[in-house]
Length: 137
Length: 137
DNA sequence: CCCAGTAGTTTGTAATACAAATAATGGCGA
DNA sequence: TCGCCATTATTTGTATTACAAACTACTGGG
Image 1 (cartoon, rainbow over the protein chains, first blue to last red):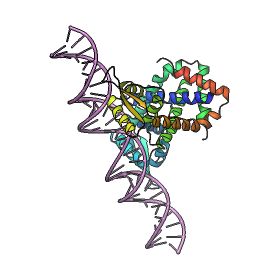
Image 2 (cartoon, rainbow over the protein chains, first blue to last red; image 1 turned 45 degrees about the vertical axis):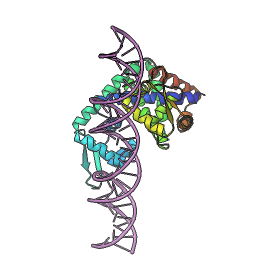
Image 3 (tube, rainbow over the protein chains, first blue to last red; image 1 turned 90 degrees about the vertical axis):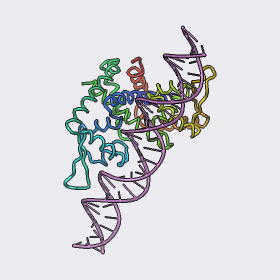
Image 4 (cartoon, each protein chain N blue to C red; image 1 turned 30 degrees about the horizontal axis):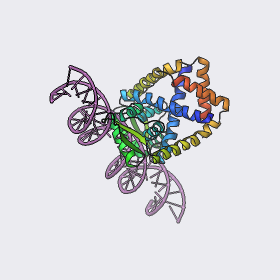
């Protein structure tokens, strides 16, 4: 069946890309989760609960994660004056720089894979991934 | 740039599929790594070191992983008569059944995404993923 | 037979993750 | 305004995941 081949291809590529991300993160002492958090925080300033939902983590897990990143000076916590229960999270300048470095490294690491496709196929792949996964559901 | 859009799409789909796999694994007390190990063992009987390399883990990490799976009756260790240092790992019948269940569940979970594509686009996506990622390098 | 190298395990430590309990605040109803 | 429940995040306790270093058992060459 075609759909089984597609499931296999998606799972395979998932583990392959996750492996690349894990390796790049490890070079800078970032777990896959921390790396993803950095990526999310590049263009957002969520509250703890929002970020936990985004990452699919329990809020207690996120407290520890942000603790460690904060001690390393990568992120900071901000209090929300409207609702003082709320804690906003955002990247420090050091965190921003690291995030850009890491994602530059990711682009470089995936470049060989991408260069195996001609520009038209790249566009096709983007559109197909978008159509399949980036939609409601 | 097109290649940046493709990197974004690959990273995004990686986290999305990994999320699905994590959730399905969690329903059966399987981590993403255990789930992947089960998938690999479906059609292989590697030695410990081979499996560790496959998963990108240290051999000491794998010892613990296989210990826990063995206690749950999912895998078994076999001694190699040619070289008695070597330990082969393979699925028990229970492990085989769980692996099939889980991967059936994965197919069901990804079906909605797949069904958004017509058969021709599914083939295209399989070929593009294969061309980009499943090649040398 | 000795010894260097290989295959796995054990031990120690840190990070990741969840659940339950806790603390602080907000907001609604009486 | 007071009381109470809900919300937001942290703390605490436990299991898993992961690595590195030390260790055990075995192999194969000299």
